[in-house]
Length: 462
Image 1 (spheres, helix red, strand yellow):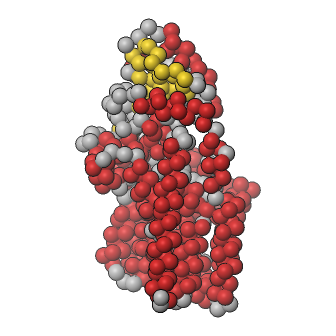
Image 2 (image 1 turned 60 degrees about the horizontal axis):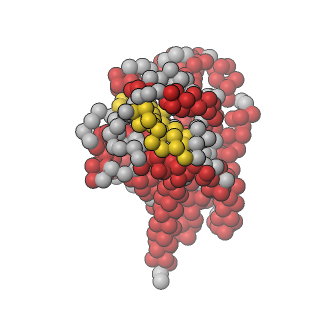
Image 3 (image 1 turned 180 degrees about the vertical axis):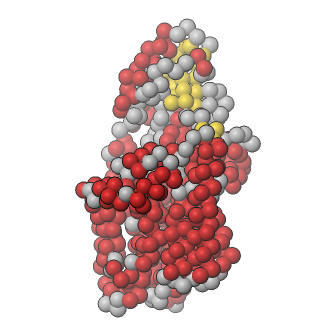
């Protein structure tokens, strides 16, 4: 087999296997009742309602899905649910999006002048970056669709394929409002450092335009309030405008938040998988990562400082591109191809959360079958009150509420079925709430217990 055919064959193999692994692991986590109302149930209910021609009001908070992150990409995704409403569509879409990133990485590496074997190595480095695996098993997030498109967008800009590039950035913008900052910064990078004037200026303009429209018009219109994540940056102001102004006029407030031990640890985690290829001279692609990196460093919200949640996803393409630039310039590094793979594999084994399937994700095995039986007994369309880990199994209906802390005063008579797990309330601070709810239901003459097993209770309204 010729080298070209061999490399492409192997690229297809590792991509296909990765997609299958991603899909199976995400499905297994869901099967074990380790997925959560936030965020899997959130997106499943919204996409289901869109597919049924109903207003996508997420019943956990009574918010319109567009008022959350202006994620219009969910509307075309609903076409899959129109064929057959099944939550596994989301796992499949996420797995394909994450796995298919190997192709544009391979193309970008070749475009930079790397030999085919080294280009294939970069695709493997991408798959072994711990965030890719971890985000796949952390419910579902619409921005995963943007990840391969960021790679493709960069490639199309470099190859002067403007219409393809335009398609990529418009689709990325539809995935999540905050990605507009990444698109704007990417445009600046393309304009200044890659000399792609047309693509750069269009990306910069569209990114700034969509950020303003999404945060000042669309999200407030559909949510009735400001952008939800603003509270994480309240030390700089109470609105987008105030935060931008104060971050520019009061740099001391910004620096005091950036230079912390938590941020140092986060930066180590972020660069460690690819640290071998990060040289200051070849870090110009990181200009496009500055907005998201800045947001992650400025907040005290811990999920924005790890390789488990989705918040570092827009940074990854530009980290890998910096590696590619380094490999293209440093003639001695390509000789270390096996060492690069070994390093990536070791870091993956240390930081990827596959071990959860032998520990954390088995914690509810004692009530697994009781929860499954309870879910089967709940008819479609009825109004349900349930536990957060059970909710994603019941979100294909208009009304699902959560029995969690701070819902002690909820009117249980508003629901037709109540399914709760007393032994595993999902959120530790909700145990007392769940116990109290079960006691209230037992005393309520309007409800009858129709399923009680292993501290899992299902009540039906008479």
